[in-house]
Amino acid sequence: MQFTKVWKKLDLYAGCENLFDFRQIRPIINWQNPFGDYFDTAFAWGPTRGRELYVGVRMRW
Image (cartoon, rainbow, N blue to C red; front, side, top):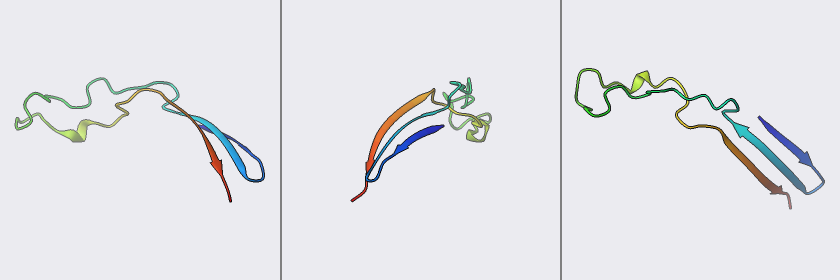
């Protein structure tokens, strides 16, 4: 989600990724044994990082 305030030559924006802070509990099964039968990165189906907030300024010339 992102909100932006626009002026003639300046934008201010703020937003959030992963708003509800959902994380997959164990995205990589058997990570200790990467050559084992049960190591498969295809099981990583959800976000692995938590909530991220950001703010910024955008200028046009």
